[in-house]
Structures are given as structure tokens and as C-alpha cells.
Image (cartoon, rainbow, N blue to C red; front, side):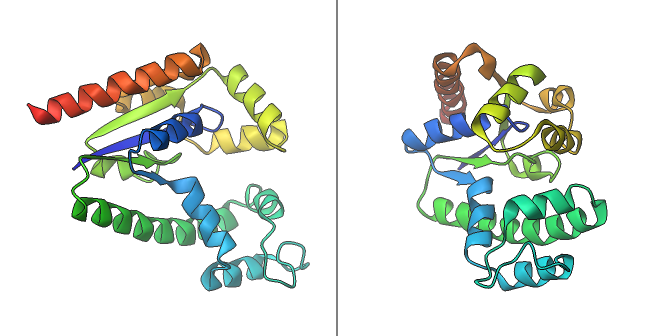
Length: 203
């Protein structure tokens, strides 16, 4: 089974590529979706940790729902809290990823995608045969985020600052997709890359 990592900084267009791969019936482990599941399922360990942070009872409501925006505003200005939260989330994410790989190996899938924004930062690339990087200039990324998400420039810059620089990611990647050239270009490039990878495997 070929394991392909898909990564890119916030606003890079990675999610658009991930959705396209899903439409092509290629199994995709979507890290962002898995994290959302952890929050949605009211994970006990996560709630306990967040409630420790939440001294003013503004993040967790009576129904045990976590306000992710308020939590983000808190942890992105407190490195210690961010590290504690990430440690818990990534541990659960690693377990889900292992189950995903085991399941698809059992079903004899030829190729799977690991969609992870922090692929290099969390060293997930070590288990990948190939890595695809989605990238775009900072101005385009900023424009996309301001248009698509309810997030301000200050928070975007903070998130970008804790991610690995794009130039470094490019050096570590096998394939690069410049998403600023449009969706049609990106999708054609994805098709070409997947074909190239599977052809190599069949030789």
C-alpha cells in the first residue's frame, strides 16, 4: 500500500485538493475532520483539560460543547496551554491514523492519502512514501482566509508563525502544486502525480 502525505500551510488550497482526491474514491485520512470529531464527541480528556484553562466558564457551556474560536483565542497567546492541548489532540489523532492505515491495508487498497497540515512538524512524513505540498503566495493565502473564514489577520499571522516555513516544506516534498494557478490546474496536476506514483509502484 502506497502512503501519500498531503500538506500545506493554512490557506494553501490543501483542503480543495483533499476533497478532489475523495471524489476520485481514494481513501483520505482528513486530520482536520478527525480533530473536529474529537471536539464533537465531547471527549472526556479534552473537556477536562479545557475546563482547567476555562476559569471564567466562557469556553465550555452547560451542554459540554467547546467553543473552538474562544479556545483558539486563548491558546494562541499562551504557548504552554497550546502545547498541552496539542499533545492530547495529536495523541488521539495518531491512534485514529493507525486504525485508518490498518483498515485500508486489510482491504488491500493500493494507495491512501494522509491529509495533515502539520505533516512535517509532527513527522508524519516519516511513514509516507511520497509527500505532496499545496502552496500559494502569502497574499493569496491571506485573501482566501479572510474571504472563507471568520478569522482576523492577527490570528492568521499567529497560526502561520507556528507552522514550518513554506520554503523548508518545498525541500522536503516530492511533489509541489501551486494552487494560485487555479483549481483546474491543481486538479490536472493531482491526476498527473497520482498516475506517476501508481505507475512507479507497478514497475
